[in-house]
Length: 261
Image 1 (cartoon, helix red, strand yellow):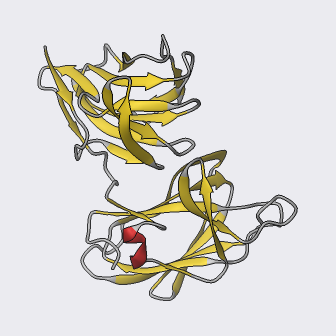
Image 2 (cartoon, rainbow, N blue to C red; image 1 turned 135 degrees about the vertical axis):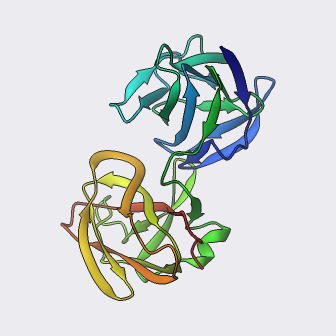
Image 3 (tube, one colour; image 1 turned 60 degrees about the vertical axis):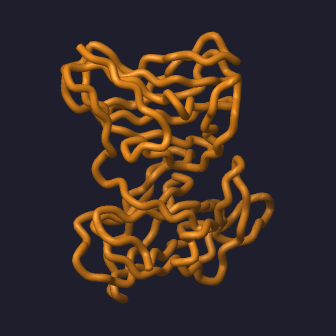
C-alpha cells in the first residue's frame, strides 16, 4: 500500500459554507467559518485521514462516508495539530466523504490537508460539484437578487435573509434569485428548515422543491439533468409557507457546464 498527502488548494477538495486562510499553531491553516461548513471529496483507497486543529477535543466534526448517516468525529487533544482517521479498513476503491463542522473553532492544514492510503491513492471532486457563486462575493454579480432580500452575516459568512426581522424572526417575503446559466446541476447553500422553492426555467414553472428539515446549513439540490449545452434563464422563487419560517442563502452552485453569466 502507498500513502499520498494532498495540500490546499486542490480540485479534489471541495470546501463549502465559508472559510478563511491564516496561520494557526505554526501551520498554514484553513478555518471553517460557517456553521455546518463542509469539506467534500472522493478518496480512492482503504484509509482516509485529515490533519486538523480544533478548540474542542470531543466532537468538532461530523462525517459521512459513502452517503451514510453522519457520525461524530473525535479529536484529541485540542489546541494542537492531529491526524484524525475519517475511515479505514474499507475496500480499495473510490469512497465519498463529507466532513462537516459541528462545534468549536476548526482548521485544516493547508500544506498537508488529507492523507489517503491504498494501492493507487487518489482524490477527486464528488459528482455534481462545480463552480460556486457566493451571492455577496465577486461572482455574485452574475446573480440578480430580487427585491426583499436583507444582507446579513451568519457565523462569519456573508449571506442574505428573506425579509426583515419581525419579533426576532425572519418571515419569508416571496423573494427570488434570477440568473442565466449553462449548467447540468443546480444547488443552493442555504439554511435547511423545511423551506420551499419553485424553480422557473425560461419563465416556465417546474415542481416545488421542499428542503430538508435539519435546522443547519448545507447544499440543497434544486435541479439535475438540466440542458448543459444551451444558456437558459433560471429563477428560484422562495415560496412563503408561514410567518414563523425564515430563510438564509449564501451560495449558488452550477456544475458540468458553463456557470452563471
